[in-house]
Amino acid sequence: MLALDEKKLDQLCKLAKLKIDDNEKEQFLSRINGVFDWIEQLSQIDVSNIDINDLSQEDTTYEREDVPVMNNTREEILSNTNNKNFDMFCVPKVVE
Figure 1 (cartoon, rainbow, N blue to C red):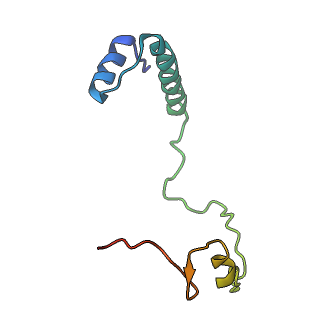
Figure 2: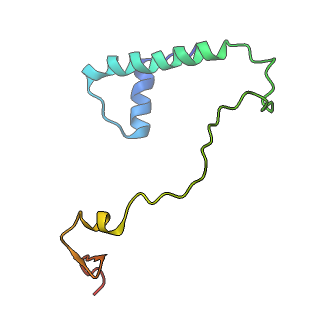
Figure 3: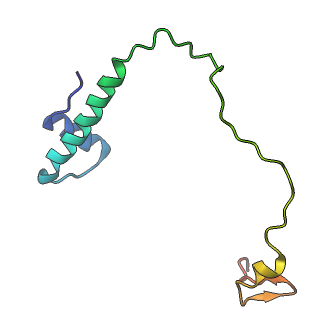
């Protein structure tokens, strides 16, 4: 079973250049060890009868009719700004 102790946590923090307060170490250890417990539970699942190339599972892709719709007009979009000229947005000069 995977388990992380305080010494290993200190080594990992040093490698990752993380600083954890001493009062936060217990919280980190319990959370990380909880993840390791979850991984241990997943590794106990028998998947020997499952073919990874089997794509025959029922697909629930919902399709809609492809109909062009005009959602936004130029006037609606330009109504959100005060900086417009000739039906276009005016932006500050970027290149000098």
